[in-house]
Amino acid sequence: MADRESFFPIPPLIRQIFDSFPLLTYPATPLPSGCPQPSQLPTLYIFSTPEDASTGKPSFNPSCLKWQAYLKFCGVSYRTGVSNNHASPSGALPFLVPAGDAKQAVQASRLPQWASENARSPRECNLESPEVKAFLALVDTRVRDAWLYALYLEPHNCHTLAQKLYRSTSVPAVNLLLSSELQKSAAAELRKCRPGGVVNRDDIYADADAAFSALSMVLGDNGWFFGAEEPGLFDATVFGYTHLILTLGWHEKEAVVARGVRRHENLVAHERRVREFCGW
Image (cartoon, rainbow, N blue to C red; front, side):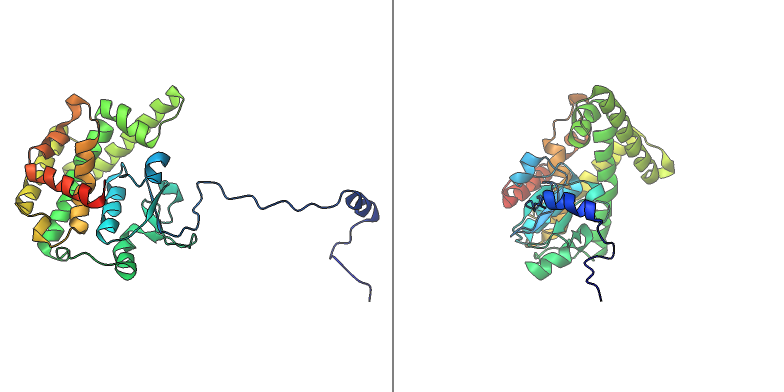
């Protein structure tokens, strides 16, 4: 039987051309810098800038910052990388890529389990307690609403903060369009959450003030919420908002939410305590 090197024999003329120009094998092209790379440390992908991510600084996104802090509470050594929601397997940041495995991703909701299996769980408050759940809901609704309004619907803040943090380009016309899209998305999100779908500035900030007062009362003179021995997920959740609220450069006339936090000395002290614990 004739020797067949291919299912599709190469015509003699074409073979002569290839014989005149021998095939060269070039080195493999490295993956783009934005692609997950195997690392000796797990990598938490967050909203950040390349400069801040390279040094492990806090994210400018409350959810990402919450998990940054929580992993530090668990004693996890990790590096941070820049990403976006489109690159996340779950459609939202953050996500974690374990050390040496760029193909496996741990979404945020599974981080406590992953941390307990690979590091430790902090001696924190009972997250299944009805009281703790109620206060977590308060943070995830009233405080979150005020954050969204302050960052996206206050015009100066949206232009000087949100647009530059999330979608800044070198084209002014594009920036105006992106800013408008950010505002529309935030307004739509708030309409889903607010009573009757009504987005009212005064009501949103009043609800946030009430939430800060309640959180201040629960914290009291304790170092950590609910008198826990160590900071845990609840502390990280609150810190995700209070740190950014206290440190972002709000426009003076649009800093209502920051003034609401600063009225409570123990909340300000808690933010500082968590920041120092995390080495920020």
